[in-house]
Amino acid sequence: MDRLIRFSALRVRQITLSFIRYLYHEIDWNGRLIGILGARGTGKTTMLLQRIKQQHPNPDIALHLSLDDPWFKEHGLIDLAEDFVNKGGQYLYLDEVHRYPDWSASIKTLYDTFPELHIVFTGSSILYLKKGDADLSRRATTYHLEGLSFREYLNVTEELDLPVFSLDEVMKDYIRISQGISEQTKVLRAFQKYTIHGYYPFFMDRKEHYPVTLANIITQVLETDLMLTGNLKIESMNKLKRFLTIIAEMVPFQPNISELSAKIVISRAMIYQFLDYLDQSAVINMVFKESKGMKKLEKPDKIYLHNTNLAYSLADDTPNKGTLRETFFVNQVKPRNRLNFGEPFDFLIDGNYAVEIGGKNKKATQIKGKKNPFLVIDDIETGYQNRIPLWLFGFLY
Figure (spheres, rainbow, N blue to C red):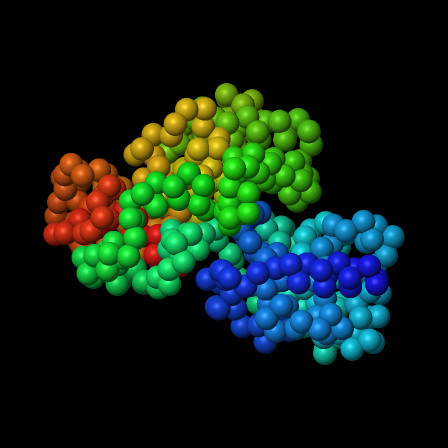
């Protein structure tokens, strides 16, 4: 245990507080059991270490543990926690919880046995949805961490302090807001860089290795996370990889489940399962019509890669510009707002705003006569008439 304490203290010392993610300020850290969910590479570990450094620098009080440490192959989490509490420990921060057998049951035991202990754990969304032996839903308060918004990217790369705007603020005051932001930075140049390498925070540490690191993360999601949680055999995993390749080549597209099933030689039910796995792992984004809810066995009306960085990583050629526009829009709007597939226009937001996305010469034909119609336009710095800059939707969180 002494080694774990030393390693925890070392990690805390090395972490910087120069940039803190949006979610940090939204979490009620006073809760006794907190789950922080999110895709690999979005900065969950960094957030835990920043919390310790800012609030609990004394290693006797707070301990950060990665449950994939080899130490746990021979030792138990509950015994460690008991020893920690007996020595005055109060805060336990647990990373990689899925790598520990019966993790949910163990966390439940810690919560019930040690009322003085505050526990924060991290995991991917799909890992939390696939419950273990114990259901933590009545005990844990959970939060979801997205990748960097375009706003956060600007703040960290250009040392700005740009605020979040609600959807209603963007839709009603886009001219003033976009003008104010454009006066502070060359927004279109930054936006182009963001679409290539700005979604995952690790670009700040190793930008030149970003494509390789991102490819490795995708491999880890498929071969580690999904193998563990989906109980997938090697044959199924190979088909899932092929399925992702097909999606990457076709997005955005309206899926034909029967065609996909025949092409990959798997059942329709497995196609739906694959879609659910990839969506919950933040590899794809599925969009449904307003009349539908997101259900495991319901065909999405449109499928996108989860973010534009993945589009550059998974595509053989330079991604289509129209695809990138829609991918960015879906990625930045869905975390905070209800987004549905629209007809004949592109999207309906919160059942209230009809949106069509395009370039400078985009016409308003598809949204004519719709309630609250807007054109979301790429390659413009500031809004005018009913045209909103595409990049401005990167300020919703």
